[in-house]
Length: 468
Image (cartoon, rainbow, N blue to C red; front, side, top):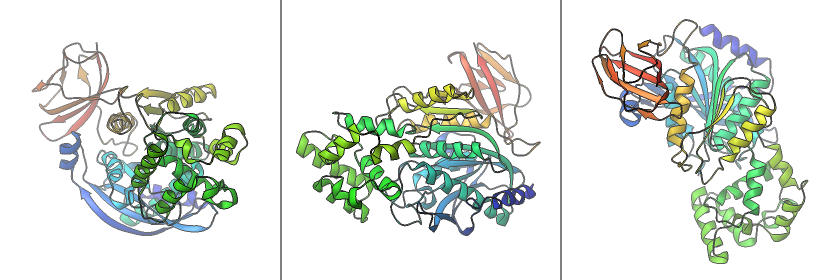
């Protein structure tokens, strides 16, 4: 199977913008199976080794640079693993990224504990890369992931790891936007990979609609620093500040606060607190539009060809048609990224001819932060339905249970059970009672469930169950 890595490297080498080089790798830590069981209630199969890799890429002006990211490896090397690209959410500081042991690094590790080689790029302007981060810039979010995929193949060859050609896409919040952008580019040119499934979570896919609504709204908004972050990033790419001067875009008192963030004196969340305090003291509530100069705001709202509007439209990532199974997961009560992003994207993709996309509300009452858990859980078990370690071996073999469909109890042939997780189609995890090889589902709602079954002997299998 190692020849698969080498073959893919050759395929990448035929594409000059994608064939990048691994610069270095650094071992970070190992998460044991017991950690995933205790912290997340998952029947993990593998210890996971985390590595930071540094690799070559390019800046938005095409100048060469080096970028960092996280690689998560199942500790066992005996099979060919599918690959998964996880793209992280908004980072508050340069090191609040997967490659620098932030919380975001745990999420790709969860996937690796069940048999994926997971990678998570840190993006331009974050991690090891200096400069302004081009926030929600679709093109760079895509190419840093492409370049990391290429560099990771070199890293896997060095480590003696095998991989299949199967590739999965996911990301949350900004990472949902980034994973959608990367997915789109890979459907246009898959570079020798077999694209299997995608799950984009709570992302601002219709960035032009979302930002325009914020600038029109008279309502308070809890993360006004996003406006500053988008403006800074898009100025790097598109030059949206008149005379390249922030004070020709933002009012003086807000430009001063934003400059402290740019200088590294405040992180994003400190900036957010200060912007909210300033807006509230001046206007009674934190309306994002009040940060902009009046003439700038008026031009944006009345001129569709204003550089800001053109930049936003250039970074919408939903007007295409996925061909692989694709989920757009959201929570209807999300206060940061409007759930309508997923609804708009689903409708447009279906209009464009896609028959494989579905938008799913994984928790109607979930906030942006509380949506993470059900979205990740739903994604994990969605992906497990497509996962194979190699052409002949699966990380979690499928097993039949009976009766199926079931009303009250189902049975597993063979040995006694030690644990049972049932996951519904929204990603909710249930732990029904069991005895020996019999499982009681009489209290569970009707529906389709994915089951993870752990046996007394230590083995783990999966099954699909219909409860009537």
